[in-house]
Image (cartoon, rainbow, N blue to C red; front, top):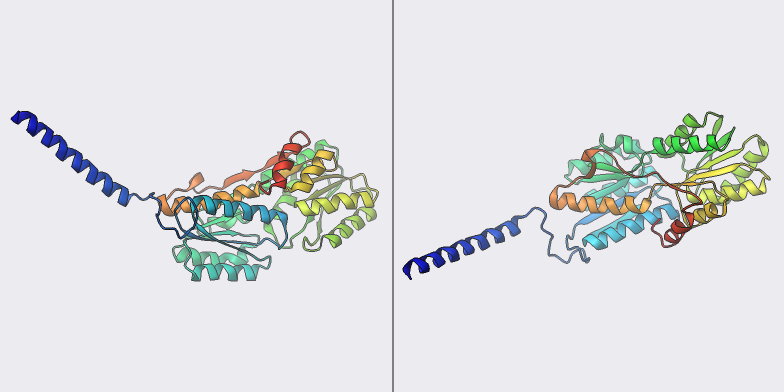
Length: 330
């Protein structure tokens, strides 16, 4: 009986020790979720994350990014502050404001990296982890960001040029809707590299779609040899399709980026195809990755760019994608 009592006493002591160790491990675990209700969501992390983009007001693309950001914030239980401004200087000011608010993480799109350099580096110097999305991949690491989430514009553009070449396009225009956006310029250059035919960049303003439509129409009327049009955003693709019809042109239309109208136009054969960089994922994954970095030092991609595209939407899959686009997630 004495031996049995001692044995059970030893087991009890060992169990108690294990419970204490488990409790300590749980309390000190780097990836333990916060129990605070600060974020208001089910994830329970409660970090304050600022997202500052260059998206223009009313641009459907950035509405999809924002939908992804907000869903991730809800899933993680983070507090999200989303703001945007197409003016690079004003965007830099929004970044500075987020740094002054001492946020836990920062997501930035960099259409004009040079204008944002000082502000992003200020955030990094303050110990705020930064993830860049959508534009500015080539400068992201230089500025100290953890990673970049988005599409490889060169790969996507080369695929567009090759497909237009297969479609027999002999002369094209590439419609740039945001002046100074390095990502858009990269797309046009990549299209030109594989098209093997003359291509001219045509500047329009996404904030004035009626004017954009008129500019594209005038270009097609002035040069009837143009048989291919490449647009770099969903709203511009829609007005480009109308411009082609008004000009009496038979030019073939392809576009980067997607919305419900574009998906329907692809389905109806008015647009050859759309290159989808999945903006919902760019917003969603950036918030999730920042949360996981803050809680567990996780970074996807080993510091290399995390690709969300290109994904090609054609007549074969446009109907399915159109339903998702109407819901604001594609």
